[in-house]
Image 1: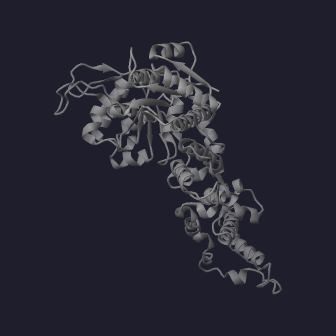
Image 2: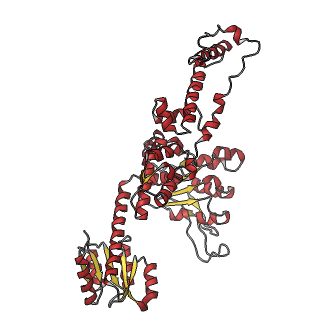
Image 3: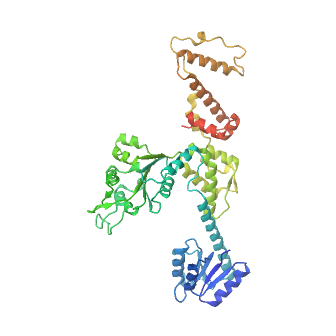
Length: 495
């Protein structure tokens, strides 16, 4: 266990705290000045919590706080201060102090505060360890494995990449992974959402400006292209970029040079551009909202990210990860999902994709009444049955189209077996009747047509019985949940 470090020039304060903490079974190390403490840090030793006086000869506690935070940003630091130093206490919080302890202090309160700081330090350590162990992206679905393989193939490339996918599907995560596994990994990764910045400011954000270039430009400012020099620039929501800026971007991609706003000297750009959009850029080109030449310049390699509803088998592992991460951030025990709650999550379409699932998990970490999350504890929007899929596929259950003109189906078919009419096997006779009609009419691909109708009818009936619960429907049908998800997609039942 790491020690609690105490730094105070007052020997009696150090003595009292050492004894109190030792009685609690906590290891302690004391310093009479900040210089000795910093030297101990340089030697490789480190505390779990630091308790420092605010006024000491040879350097203040606030100076010590700043220097320690540079080396150990997550270290909880408690600043001891007299009541007359409340302004300094505010400065301590601004400098990142965990808490301040007014002198003279109650010893039991001081120990309690140090205990809280120790728990915070342990949570920070767990969070860092978890972050180091968790892969940058999660997914076992075939669609995500294709994305991972593409990232691997592009790992030694400098080529421009266009990432497409719905909002919230994780496009920036893919861009960061492409950067991390590229030859530019040691360079900066700079991201900008072109849709979130007003048009009048976007040009300056991208290319920077010279002093006096416009009202309010009181100093020269480097743009994102300069900030990303030697690394990667991620342009999110590129489809919303104004046309005049598209022209400037095309020029940078073409010849690697640009000008700051108000500047006269060209600047060289050594940047790999990764762009992303949730829009159909081909359609934007046809509508005149996006330059065709810029589209082709960006569309060197296109990487499509699947929506979460296309990779439902990843929802359980993503949910567990987000619940664990939320619990770590909040300092609470992670919630667990019951089978019923997990089944609700898996069948929900998540229009907001992974980002929405993450928000749901954070909401559950705060709002769920018990450690095990039941289906009734989920947000209201997840409790509605997924009727959209049923409504969109209702055509599959509509009456069959009439026979071609001049053809009498009844006269061309053998009479139905009366024993089957209305009985449990009546549907077999009906299917045979429809097959004969289609074959006689010359309909191509009869097998495919009837198979799709049959499968759609089975799945929709099972979903109707289970109120849209896909896992339960799959169990009733005797197929796997991955199979029913794939069939729903193939048959267009989730449109």
